[in-house]
Image 1 (cartoon, helix red, strand yellow):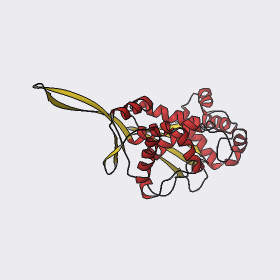
Image 2 (spheres, rainbow, N blue to C red):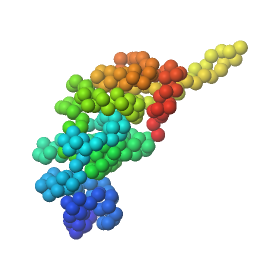
Image 3 (cartoon, one colour):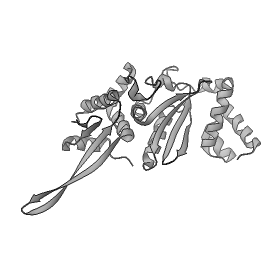
Image 4 (spheres, one colour):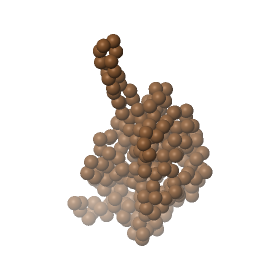
Length: 259
């Protein structure tokens, strides 16, 4: 628990526009706590943050700020796989959440870095859950940047890219593929044994798999693979496999395993 004076000082600095990391250093509390207090205070008093928004515009769609396109293409892949946008019914603030398995700490950092690059005026918040970390960022513009948002789960509604998103993915397809693999994909090594000259020898081969319930998202993944010349096939109704040696080599060069 933090005393009321610490919280009051923190909120005052938030309203003044100081970065969350700097506030956390000054008052010696976790950056996530700063972000949480700021989120709730801004939801109750959005007018007190208007000047901060004016000085630090960040929405590429509304404020015409230049977008970090490679980071956005990667973040779009993460969002389509393991992300969601939620909106408070009482306030304009929206939350973009990327669910990351704790077995891959590098993925958690990559998701946080992508969020920071796409919306540098906002702060990343990490929320620990059982076996996973939710990497979050609060904004009033996530629906602008992710028009795929809608009621219900993604596989229950149509998922298609806006024209401006299509251009970004066409320019940065590998980042998009990497985001999809890092969310709903994997790189595995299979093996088999074959008799050679009377002896059984072990052979290993690498494959990439991508699994998603949404046919639209699977189609977007295959579309991106086609753009970069990666051969793929369906191993079952929801699982897409990349197993050809040359295609696996391309994936290893541009995607690689989770870490």
